[in-house]
Image 1: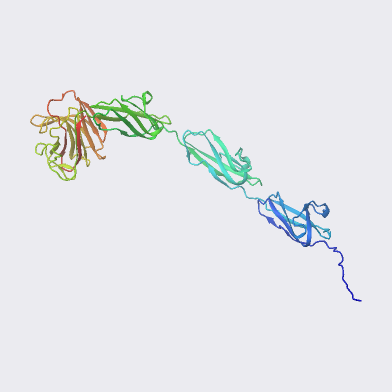
Image 2: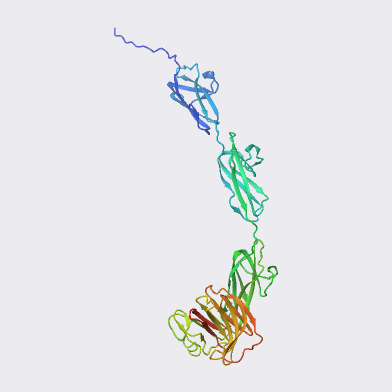
Length: 492
């Protein structure tokens, strides 16, 4: 016989061997889910229960990986400070089932750290008039926050709670704030694990004091003399804060009683158009402003200007280079009658009574003369301007000088010798550039300006304007250290 022989293995009666269960130990704070896993020594299907001693057939939760040796499943809903036990039994493909539990056990760490607080607001100084604001901060974990206006109060004793409980964004509204006050709010928070801050987190801010200062006005325009024929112009000025400005053509009118308002209400740039201007006229506009807090100026800010008379010329000269005497195409009188002014680093005098005078000017009886000079004359020199000069040598007229921190107005006459009659004086800061001295004579009213500010207004009822050739002049009385830089003049 030829023998063919074989065997059939006896049926497997050994259930799967389980190993490599994970996770183990303690998982990090905040872990809310993890993967249970293990391996078997043969293809199997594994199930688990959270109760020990449950038979495989009665377990309802099955691992992924059925029919393989690698088993895993995800568990969720984990919480801090808790230990978890999962009891695993497996069955191989021959139906052999583990009669005992395989334990996978681990814990999630307990949260013992209180919330971290940050980004508290508001800070700094809130605007005057603020009566309420929102306190806010953030926490690095879900928390409930409370506050006190007293430092060192325990969280459990605080009675005022932020909205946002159980979240990371905390806020609350506080009211009844008062100008000029600083506010301190001491905040403590507690997380869902019951960890409360042992220290204060300070939110501090102030409300600005009430504004009681009226606007500061500056840069008023126009100034000086506008061209003949000008019938309208734009008044303008600036304020140091948002304001509404009004004006009157009469001095001393209260802001509330002024009827004409500038454009630019609620801003810092103010302007208004005035019309109906007439040649040979001086205009005065008295301006007062009120800020948004209701503070109004108690005093006038004067914008003053003139419109030149028609059909007249204005003579101007800027002193540069070298020229003696002044010529300007024959515009100025020759040396000998009015002295010698030279163009050499600015005009300067070579004698104690040197001056420059228009030769045969086309100037009406209402006129002005203006100079700028280079330095404070102190008490050593008198930069001067003259109007209504009648003679070719000196002559009667009006004289304004800058001297010893003042501007002074004189009436002069020449009856063989030049006489000066003092009329008026005013303090002036003569060191301030551009050091512009201006004299206007209009009718029997004479005005002296320094740097565009009207300092003297004098009505001379004793002297009618006499017949003769009206003239304007620039002069330096005294030493040669003060230089005239520019000279202009003509009809008002």
